[in-house]
Length: 97
Image 1 (cartoon, rainbow, N blue to C red):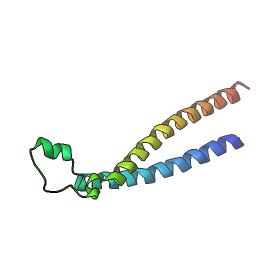
Image 2: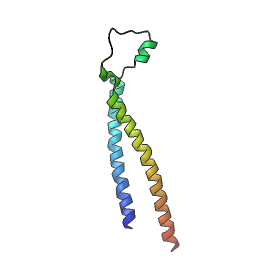
Image 3: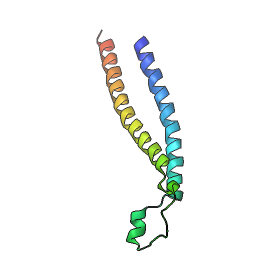
């Protein structure tokens, strides 16, 4: 029972962290929508600039938040699946006794 409580606590904590990360990802995507400028798109549109674009237009930090969020979600879903299988096996074992 103690191990099950630990698993539940870890999972709930990761859910809260994932929720906060989702909010950060939303804010990052909002910034990307507002500030991102692609030089490839400008070239396709035959728009030439007199100087290089400012560094902030590449939104490197925001893209980093999006990558971290997707990586976290991927690992979190795998973790949840493993924990659910573990809990189901525990319930089956408990009911067989």
